[in-house]
Each structure stands twice: as structure tokens, then as C-alpha cells.
Image (cartoon, rainbow, N blue to C red; front, side, top):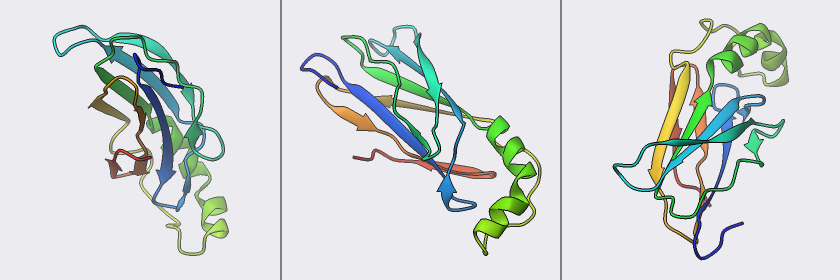
Length: 135
């Protein structure tokens, strides 16, 4: 929950290669208070079965920049083993893909302003990703 002096952050991940949420992706949250300030690790969490990370740590007062680090390599390594199951769940899902991910991690850095909530969804597949400011 945000106040007049802090911003808040949430995220979720959709695996666009299968059209489903990405479960079990570890996410770390860091913040800094100014362009020249050092990053402070605040903690992290992992996505749930709906691809959402609902318990990211609160941002400290004075935060101006936030970094979300998504550890996606393990997700895709695990997903490769489940491709057959996923393909059965969705007829047009790819049945074979290279193991692992081209991007083993995704780091997203963005500016925040006090009193606002920032929802930053990650659209992910083994060979690319996209992010945007959601609502």
C-alpha cells in the first residue's frame, strides 16, 4: 500500500510461448534514492500459480528508482521437462524448444514517484521478453 511518501511495486509474468502464467520464478527487488545512489537489495519472492508476486517488500521512503531481477533460467529448464504436459494442455503450444532460455535473467529498472503504485508485467518466452507499466 502506498502513502504520500512512498511508491509501491507489483508484478506478474505471462509465458507467451504457452499462453499461461509463469509459476515459480524467483524475483529480487532493489531500490535506490537518486540516480547516483547505490542499489540496496530489499528482498524478493517468487511467482505463484497465477504468475503473480504478491508479497514484494515495501519500498523505503525516498526511493526514486527500482530494479526487478527475474531469474528465468530455472523456470525454462523446468518448463522444458514439462513441454509435453503443457502442449497437451494447449493444442497449439510448441512441443519442442531449445533447452534453457536465451536470457537466463531479466533485469528491469524503472523510475518511481512517491504516492503511486507501479505494476510492471513481464511477457516472457525463451527467446525474448517485453515489459510495460500496467495498472
